[in-house]
Each structure stands twice: as structure tokens, then as C-alpha cells.
Image (cartoon, rainbow, N blue to C red; front, side, top):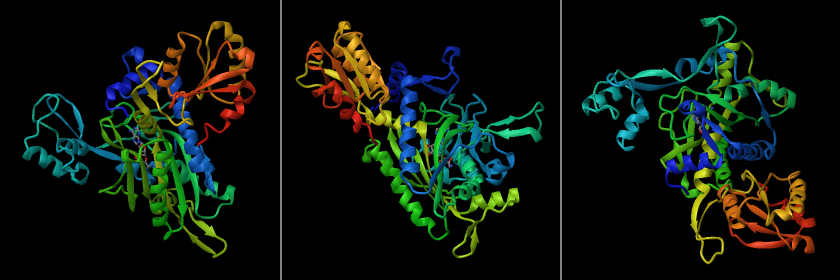
Length: 458
Ligand code: GAP
């Protein structure tokens, strides 16, 4: 587990996981680009989510809805009216602060700023003569609401009628398609719709690397169910999401539930799963009992019935929704923080220390690296690469000593290295080295595909 955020930022940049966005222009603050390894890792994480939440669950369907939605969607959902955070500015240096987080941090968590009203926060700042952490002055604006949605315009005229929003959550795409999916799949309750995609929020205080950004990816899952069954499904999904994180390799002691003190406008019950990042506990997942708020509002605003018809009982009703949502970027960050180790190696010919990414094999950007011991062995090694890369993500490295090449693969989490050596031509075999144990076994080339087949499953 890594202890220092700057170390993980440097590691991500130098190995090609994550770069600063628009780097050559000095960067655009709080935007990040996934490099060759980061893109693979994130895709692998999304694949495990799809497997666990869509493929392995009966009556679960994935959709891919448009990012731009009818503006009435966001009025119905309540985002236009109330998707805001409280903020205040320092009048002297103009720094903007997110008011609730400011109080929580200032009091080291003794006061949860989230539970205070805007007036209570203003009062606290005055009574305690709080100073601006940037310029030291004590001269703040009132606490005001700041809407987090990004607005843009469609068509050629920038006016109120042409305003559209970049979606601040994926969920609404699932809600507006609830009946489309139910009818085309002929599903009975409970059934689920999931979606993986980008969301955008004009966060007041983004930061902590990819933890809080203005553009990010969510993996959201909605279970449509009958009122009365909702709380049991809510409880089940809190555990289901936690088990998913444990299966990905996050240690249980670094995970905790955090029930919401203040519920969102749509929620009856809400709980986060937090991970212990180097900067402290941070939300990875949210499980929300959203009642039938969203579908009721869409019925009201669109004028279209959003009712489910149970043809066995002849009942018609608007279902409840349990939501389980995960931030893909936060999960990438958590997995990297958890898996990164600097290890001392006892009695080894491979050197004294190594950096190793003990990542779950299903998540590893490369599953296998093929390393010819000498350039003279390239032909055989390339033939192995050509065959195995049809099935597995493979890397090929012929540069430097074999020890250095093992080190490079350890650092990026490749679970297995294949060494092609001078014996290979005689015995048609190669050496496979295990990243975690560093143990080596000899396997014939014909057996390789079978040998690896079950190693990367999730
Ligand atoms: N549909 C419900 C919803 O959007 P949320 O708790 O606001 O709920 C869901 O967001 C998940 O999205 C969070 O648990 C978090 O992992 C991720 N997330 C939210 N805001 C984010 C941001 N600014 N940057 C990166 N990830 C974010």
C-alpha cells in the first residue's frame, strides 16, 4: 500500500498510467489523461464491473445512453433546482472554498460540515474568527449555493431555449429508458439496468489527483423493484458492492461503510463505501434507496406513464429504485494505491529491493511479458508472442538484462514473464516466472495456452 499521494502521481506518470491533461499547454487543472497502461487498467476494471453487475445477475441489462439529454430531465430529477454545493469566497485573495468540507477539515472531522446550514457555517466562521488558509485574512462572502452542472448550448444561438447540460450522473439515462428496457426484455420486477460512462461536475474544490475531478466515469446500476422489497435489496447491495471491492484486491481493513447523515432530496436510505486513500477516507461507492422519486417526477414532467404493470395481479404502480454506483476513476486510484509495494527481497539473485504492483491478474494491463534472453532468440520469442497475444494482452521486451526486464514488469503488475532461453530450441520449453512469488517453472510451448487459461479469470 502506498502512503504518499505525490509518489502515486509520479509513479502513474512515469510508467504511463495517468498523465496531466493538456500537459504541453501547462495542463488544465484537474483533468487527467489515461496513458497506455492506465487505459488498459481502467478498461479491465470496467470489464470486471460488467461481469459482476450485469453478466452474473439475472435480468440485468447494460445500456449506453446519450450524455446530452432533454433539459427537462434535469428539472424533473431536481438537479437544476438543487444539485449544488455550498461555497464561499475569500474577498481578499478570491479563493473559493466548498463550505461543508472546509468546516469538516478545519475541525479534523469533529464537526461534519455536511450537517450544518449555510447560516450555521457563516456563524461558525465569524465566531471562531476563521482565517483564509491561503492569505490569512478573515473576510469572507456569505455562503451561497453553487450549481455543479456544466451548461452548454445546442444549435447556433446561445439563449435559454437552447441550453443543454452535460450529464452530472448516468442514472437519469437509465430512468428515462426504464420502460423501453422493461418492454423489450419482457422483464418482471425486480430487474436492473446498468451503464458505464462519463459524467461532468463543476466541482468547487476538485483535487487529490483523480479522486475528485470535473470529468469522470461512473459505473451505475439501478434495481427496479416493488415498494416493500426495497430495504432488503438496499441492504443486499451494500454488501454486494463491498464484496466486489474485496474480490478486486482491496483489503477489508481499508474499506468502511459510511451512512449519510444528511439524505439527498431523492433518498430514503443512503450509504457510501469508503476506501482509506493516502489522503484519508474517501467515497468509492454509493448505495441509495431512491424510492419512486425519479420515476414519479419523470411521469409528472414528461406526461408519460412510468408505471409497471404486473399482469399476474393486474396491479399498476411506479417501482422503487435501489442504486449502486461506483466511480471508475476512484476505483482505478484505489486499486493502484492498494497494490503498490516497495519490497525487500531476501536471498535473491534479482537484487535487494523491487517495486511491485500486486494487482489482481484480471486487472493487469499486460497478462504476460515475453522476454528473449538474447536477441538471437527473437524469432522463437516473437512466434510465441504472436500466438499468445491472440488470446492474452502480452508485452514484448528484449532490452536490457533479464533482471531489469523482470523489474520493469513487476512495476507495472504483469503477473507472468516468459523467458525464452538457449535450452528452448532443444526442449521446446520456456521458463514462466510468477510476479508475486518470483518462483519459476518450466513449461512446454504447446502447453502455454492451457497453462494460462484460468489464471486471469475474475
Ligand atoms: N447517481 C448517483 C450519483 O451520482 P454520487 O455519489 O454523486 O451519486 C457516484 O456519485 C460515484 O461517482 C461516487 O461514489 C464517486 O465514486 C464518483 N464521483 C462522484 N463525483 C466525482 C468526481 N467529482 N470525481 C470523480 N469521481 C466522482
